[in-house]
Image (cartoon, rainbow, N blue to C red; front, top):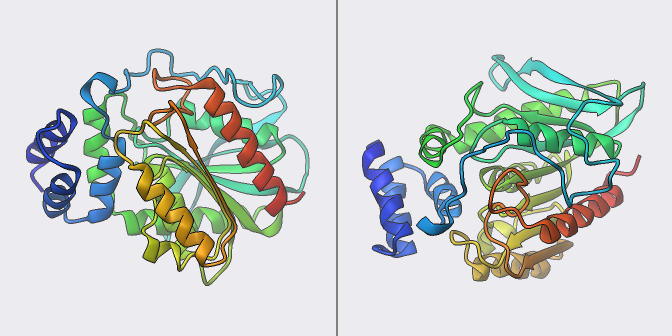
Length: 306
């Protein structure tokens, strides 16, 4: 794989030198994966809108959830790095957060953005834990975290998406084996790269049924053909001004889900760019983030009762 060539393609797409179709065709050929090319496309923004590097790595939580939820500390929670067995018996790690006490509580898996398992994703895990969930954020980069877009692209290009799905499913097995977890299903949510992986995990889980509900945030949508195979209720949150994900593709996924009889609610937020939920970056849109948060919580409460 020629990383320099891929970076040149990204730049060419951002400044309008090549079309979306040309970008996908050339990038998927270069990286050997259409899924990875789609993730790169989803994260591509016009040059003037590329998110700034994280200045304060601790998320503020402003505009998301209740005042009690917006904590960046572990007060009232048990949290930290955990280890569990991977699909081939290897040791994987992730960040676990849950309320103090014996529980049990329903479980969620939170899947990272292309930056990696950084402080923002850990903070999101704690926010959900404050709402009464046992939450696992798998470390899909195995210890690496990016702060610059070029670093993130390099890490994304190294990911085997199918293998990442299997790692997530190992994390789900770990969650469901915990004494603090109730039920035999989890909710899955993810952001950008993680939003696409949440969708892929739910799609791969169609036969086993461990994923009760999936909540992608601006993850590359399923194609209509893929969506027709999904068995999982879906609540999606997308930005109308996302430079990498066409609104038509999001709408096509929703139409296919509806035609297949899968309950879904997809909101496309006017004026919201890619990564509008990330309150550590300039792309953050408080009103859209707060609304999406409440919608997702409502769906999790419906499909993962305590």
